[in-house]
Amino acid sequence: WKIFWDLQCPYSKKSWENFPAIKSRFENEYDFTIHLTSLAFHPQAFQAQCAATLIKTYKGYNEMLKFVDACFESQESYMNAALGDCRKSEVEAVFADIAEKGGFFDDELTKEKF
Image 1 (cartoon, one colour):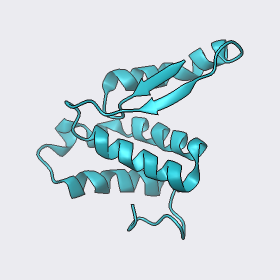
Image 2 (image 1 turned 30 degrees about the vertical axis):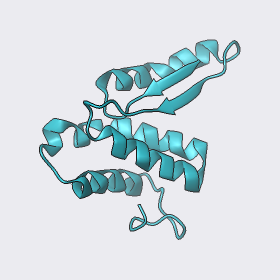
Image 3 (image 1 turned 90 degrees about the vertical axis):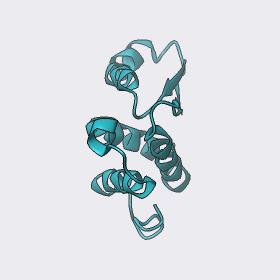
Image 4 (image 1 turned 60 degrees about the vertical axis):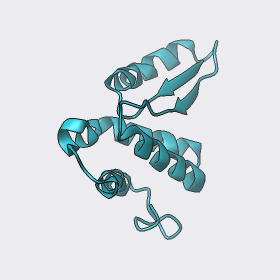
């Protein structure tokens, strides 16, 4: 199964919440692949997708999935209601904070690079 998630989408979050049960039920019958996308009407989704891709590049797929978990757990912090009419740098800072709290930074991938 190919699963497409937008990290700002509340419906994607609902799918993410149900994913462990679905995966455990069907993992012997199907392979699951997670794809991140950004819908045009979710302005922070592209930055989230970029952040996840950066973590995947430096840390690998499994760490990217952990970052996805952290993003969905913190989704309210980057929804339109929380950020309003903000600058791109403010959105990037929210995802850098999520990555920092998740322990994704080290000597190779720093908050400044992020």
